Image (tube, rainbow, N blue to C red):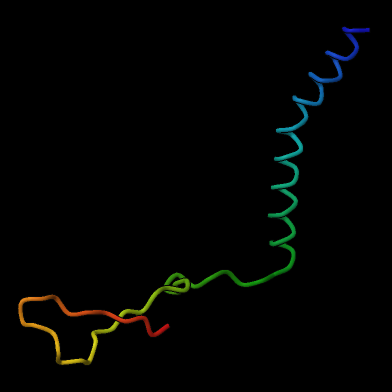
Length: 70
């Protein structure tokens, strides 16, 4: 009885990487078959834009402040 359950557990553990690779491969094939164009090389993801503050109340010895405009 114990040997049968150990065998089942061993087979399950060995199948996990195979199933993970199968899922990854199917995802890649699905993306390939959908025919969506890839992202352009020069395209960038969303990023934070920082601009100099327009206030003149800062001292000359301090670096300029930035504010988020995104």
